[in-house]
Image (cartoon, rainbow, N blue to C red; front, side):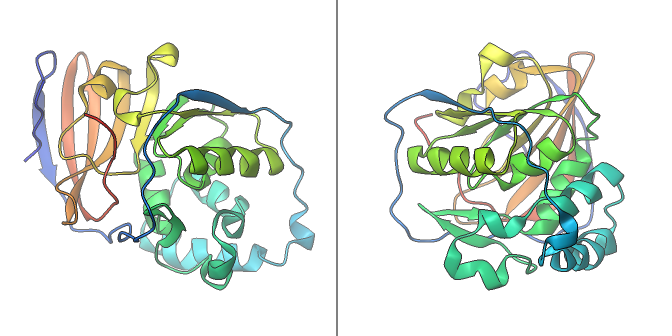
Length: 264
């Protein structure tokens, strides 16, 4: 069941149980970093004009989308197009380049992973995004999920607690030409109140309960997709919808994410 230690303003009124889906990834053992500063980083250059006709990895992305994503039922044309455009190999460490488009997560250092392509697509689709939506992401990681959301022509606000990953993602996203992404090096549990409310929220690491600040930063009609469960165990992926001040919760199945870290 969903639990929350401080849940006075919202009521979860409905839960559907759907078939189990493939998990997102497992933990790696690199040294964990803790937050010692709060800094806003903007990827502010103009979008790059990638010439797909000269991109040797385009065929890999097309196969990934057809077999791993569309083949499993993802239908949103914005999601499919974004997954085909974003060069996933730019977001993985060099030693894993040969596995960049494989059907599994990959380590990116500091105990974190880049999620399985299908999970990225699924979580993006259930948000039911429209162009111009304001999206909060908790857990920037390599920046891949943020890039996919940005390719869907949304305004992305993404938070990463590990300073090194935040800085690396900043450089990567600027080099790729994204101008509609802002990165904050902070504890994502508390969201980003300065830019709230958000049309959609996506959490790419698992807390053991629903962060109350994220609920308070949901706009009317917004959606939040989040894995919830104990560290090191299988978690549940939840879709929460804010409908007239009430939270409707849908169980999307079993997943395994790295834990949401921070002091909370």
